[in-house]
Amino acid sequence: ERRTLGDGAVHLPGFTTGHDRAILGAIATLAEQAPFRRMTVPGGGVMSVALTSCGDCGWCSDERGYCYAAKDPLTGRSWPSMPNVLKGIAKDAAQQAGYDEFEPQSCLINRYETGARMGMHQDKDEGCLEAPVVSLSIGIPARFMFGGVEREQAVEVVDLYHGDAVIWGGPSRLAWHGIKPLRSAFHPLTGALRYNLTFRAIAEDT
Ligand code: MD3
Ligand code: FE
Image (cartoon, rainbow, N blue to C red; front, side, top):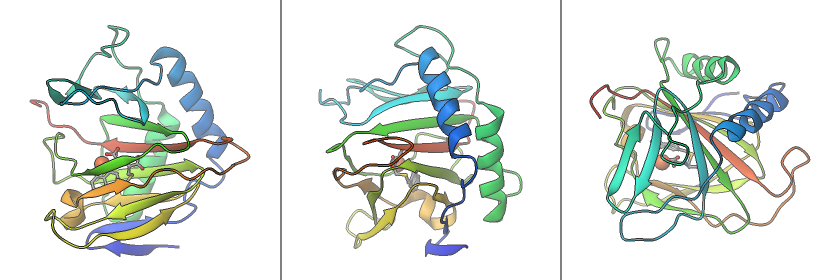
């Protein structure tokens, strides 16, 4: 099944079906090498979401701002390489949405506990904004807020469930978006947790 969520946003409900255990196994192995951590944001707040990354670089935040860095600031080591199982699923999802050439360099993995949220933001630290972002949702559901390219545009709420893939390309690539505080729920594979994986192409000089 393939739905259109918005201009350039393609939703593939249940896309990861059959790969869930492989995805969760990969996350567990990655987290041994680059643990989930909550990062500080400019202004001094601490994110409620815990995150880690794999691939050539990883998304980082501190008091000074956001960037993609080749080394994990927590361990001082390079981020673990992107597991082939994850890269393959992301490339297949992108292909379904018409992006045959998508080559993700980085995968950001967000981990939500009950109450964790992500405020409205745009993703534009990647440099290559022509490439889509592929997201995979695993575990308990989340209420995703999907706005427009302008901050003032109306926000639509869309539920994202275990196994859903969404490919954010075209005009949706710069849409404002966020996640409402996670409601308490249980999923047999993750317990009370939700994971979101986002695969991104990053320009060299960012
Ligand atoms: C639309 N993550 O990591 S996934 C993020 O569920 C992020 O953890 C949320 O926003 C999460 O930056 C939302 C859906 C998503 C991800 C990336 C996007 C939507 C996007 C990038 C551009 C446009
Ligand atoms: Fe985002």
